[in-house]
Length: 358
Image (cartoon, rainbow, N blue to C red):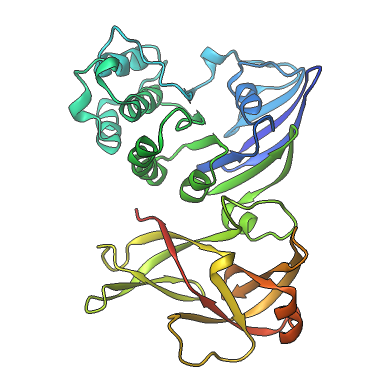
């Protein structure tokens, strides 16, 4: 069952107007520039902002409509803010127990112990917040939110207050939660890396409106949306380790459409791995390429072409089996190759970035 959220909220300088159907499991990233409405939407879902025109159903249960408005304390949700906001006079364990005590139906002790293990905070439980690093405090805050046994977890830029080192410290724990949680997570961020590593579903917000919403893999492959996560456009693929070549320290990552060779990372056969392929690292050929240092060559079909901001280049979308890849080519090269949708092409991939191995 899914989440249906419809909100209209007007301020003098800003209007939120969204109508969304979101998955009932996995991580949905609310992505957009500052001021796009991400946090306002999250606060409406939490009941912290009351939209005069609002409807919210979470897995079949009405939290808000014309006749109903559940206040925040009656909504079975967990909320993680940018700052951990732990009680300074309580230990980490005390903060978790506070969360359990205020829940109508707290998380079972065994499941809480599992959350503590997933987040790696077992050794921190007797420490006070001032004895914890920023990343450690945020991991305790996430565990406290989960101790409420929420049906929905809201995370409002939980890594924004951390420096790069602390972000890299906490991301693997969030990836673990991503695979283990059976509740939906709405994750506000303007970080492309967090979207690529954590999200299953993506909502693109701009000026208080949802430009588009859909599965991450298909959203990143769209040519009509301004979604360039970080320095460049690119796609994310879900793969599994299909082969190992220990003599060359390589592993093959298989997906429905082919396999990609990457540096060995100590992963066993069959292990899931999420990878990112940037358009700038993909080239196209209209004939099978000859011998080359580029080891990843896949046959596909050119699906679409689209102009970019710079007049010299365009993006080409290629279908390889069930997967979609993006390639950046110059218009001169496209003309010389006579590229056209429907044409068979060979995709050469120079680099594959391993994002998450869970």
